[in-house]
Structure formats: C-alpha cells, structure tokens
Length: 118
Image 1 (cartoon, rainbow, N blue to C red):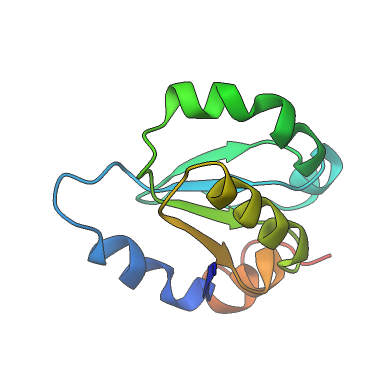
Image 2: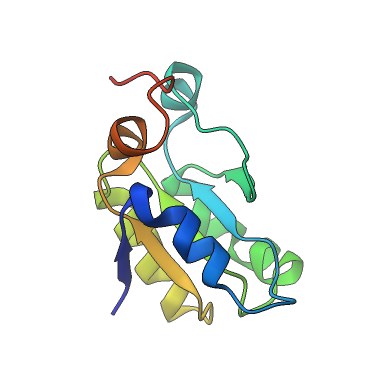
C-alpha cells in the first residue's frame, strides 16, 4: 500500500526521515509540456523528471543510481499517474515511496502559490 502524502505535509515527511537517510527525491512523472507550464523548485529535495511512459525503460537506471530505501515522492498533475508510478516502483524494490496526493495542483494550493495551475 502506497502512502498518500499531501504537499502541505511534505516538509514534515522530509524532516521525519532518519538521520543519514538519502536526500528525498521528488519524481515528477508529467509530460515535458506540463513541466514547462508548471514545475516545483528544489527545496530540501532532489527533483527528477521522467515522464510516466519512460519509467519502465529507465527502471534499471534508477535502481543503479538510487538505493532501494531512497525516499521517493511521486508527483503528477492531480495524483493518478504518480500513484501508478509509485506502485510500480514499490513492486520493483523501492521501499520508501509515497504519492503526492493532489499532484502539482495541490502543491500550488498548499505549498507554493507561485507554481501555476493548469
């Protein structure tokens, strides 16, 4: 079961990670045109963009670059695509995966109003 994390609770989640844990990764699975329209800014996390359709092809790359216990928060427009990717990552060995419920739309509402809504 993938935990749902609201953007408002992101900092608390990030700050609750054990000392020495890898820097959290926000995996934005939206399409390139969506990222050009609206994007989050790195703030105590690393931001990586991989469109949902490319995640399976890049799984081995992710596994080579990231430890299995890498904290990963998946992000899309409203949370549906990112939930599918979060489930996929969890099924393939990643143990610290959450879904950002409400996606970038909720991020704009709850964390950073400068992020455009579309």
